[in-house]
Length: 149
Image (cartoon, rainbow, N blue to C red; front, side, top):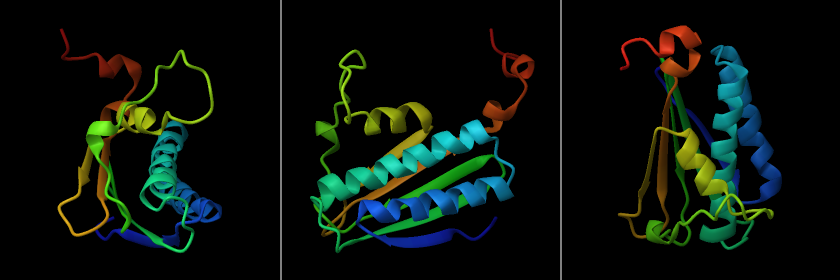
């Protein structure tokens, strides 16, 4: 897939299902294993939820722009908002032993994705870029350990 798939949704949680469905269809068409696809959908959903909650402070009348690329064994998503810029130094996922709802979005994103970057070098908003290389994720278990000490 040489061209990105672009999607613009309102900053209302009820529209997050649109991005999930687009991603699920993309991964199904490209035969991405379901476990990997599920994790990637989770990351995008968590990132968009954080934009709604923190960048737009719950305002449902803003927009979230998403661009997806799936080429060879690499998935890249860029998510753009125009709200309050994030301060990544304040991102501190809570301890996993502290069982309660919420607060694990950035933890999941950083655990699942290979590269995560936040660009705030603009007048407003943030551009989040996340990349996952899943060549090794789809190889049989016996092959994954080859070449490693």
